[in-house]
Length: 305
Image (cartoon, rainbow, N blue to C red; front, top):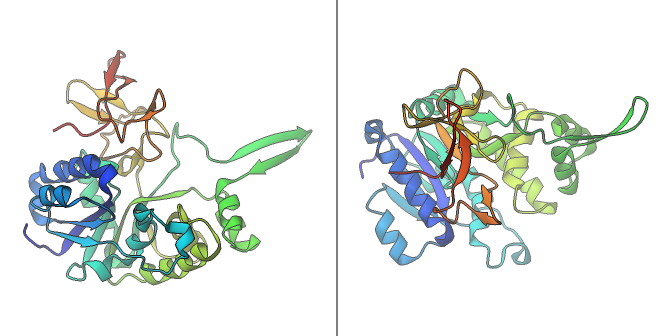
């Protein structure tokens, strides 16, 4: 595949190969993709899977443990390399000037969001979406004790403290809108890479590997104040937070609230569960969602070619 100065990068193991292929196909179906190079970090793909996917992408590189992690934390869990390697994309693919990371459990519906991410990364900025908006699930909890006294629980704060982050820093991110690192953009020379890696080393030293890179990027933005361009929700629509609606006329998924903007990137982070089965691992699963005309329709949220 043709090399350009912009790369879309993702990572997958053998379990997520189906979604990986769908992500790649959802990119390549757009005519604008001719100006983009697709790169893959291999965290446990089979040789047969590599032979299939390498025909559709520019380059495949083996993911590494770019930061040293005790073996007991990661033994047999190659996929956890996604929690580390995405902070080192210029090391894997140095020939590019701009990078857009998309988790392999996401797919592209509207190319306008791809353009927005690359635009957002100009002047060294981090392009990313906050997981907060109309109808989105609230991550913090309040337990009222009596009168005006309440106990407030923040997942961000809890994760930060369990990873050895100071109380002062943890408070700064406690109620900041959480940043989902499943889709982000950066240019090659952005200072954000260095700040992110610094924070990633901190979160990995005492905390769990899973989620460490997300915590690190939240610290980078809300504590270290790296320059950031916040993009709209439809640029990284997390369906587990709020199901989309479907526009039967245009055959497109849209935001469920007016004005029903078309979803650019559909992200199945945390899974869409049906009878204890995850749609990410079983494409045959379908759920009822609302159409714009008010009917309930049975659909998969995975990419359909």
